[in-house]
Image (tube, rainbow, N blue to C red):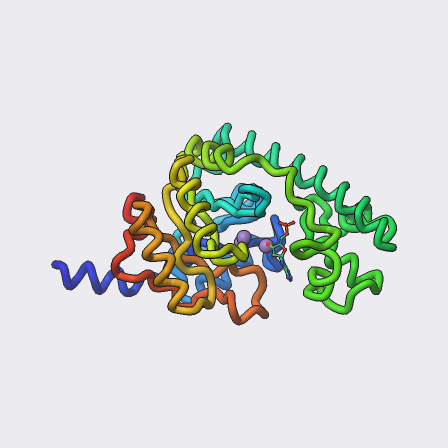
Length: 283
Ligand code: AMP
Ligand code: MN
Ligand code: MN
Ligand code: MN
């Protein structure tokens, strides 16, 4: 019996962090699901930045993985930009409607400020151009990066982030988001599991990272993302230890955006350390 269950679990391949064209991913929701199925993913969370639009328009796809409805909220904690995943949410809930509406407005306000700041650096009209590129989708720095490349201010999106949009640069405007406790509350009100995304990607010292995790847990946070894409095993172990210290569940995801990024592939191995309690244990 136990052997059967273990065998069944080993055949499961969970990827609980992916993006579609509803935020800054390259694939439509339907294409994402097809790619994930082809890559052997059996359970797929779709977690667009501050949006559930991709989930609401997702058609039934034959042979598709099991879909977990998700979202990746932007927030700030003591001046650091932080992302919180809502996993297994009710995408049609009032809480999600309120939350995504507020975050969409925050994104627009931030984008206007990014545009003003870029104008001071010799890039005119960036807000209107980024808005045009974003179309109906939530506007993000990725759309500014596309415009900077298109207008010849940068050779690649990476260079646009390095020069104009990344941490500490003119386009790095952080303080328009809802606070950490608010995004956790929205997720829980929508029936989801609040999961701190990629804690190693905020450039924090170990002490500050643990202070963030402590604050997250104290505000009702339930899980942390122990594996985010291709990752040094020492980091995985440190995050597994953080789970144990703070009594949190563990999640794992690729943070897939597009097929040409080998560090964030669909179907990549995302096996949690045995000491972790997986976030899906409670679903
Ligand atoms: P935003 O949600 O508007 O803050 O945009 C952040 C998104 O930009 C991230 O989710 C990544 O997809 C992308 N991004 C962040 N940093 C970089 C970078 N250095 N190079 C390319 N893309 C990046
Ligand atoms: Mn992104
Ligand atoms: Mn993120
Ligand atoms: Mn992400």
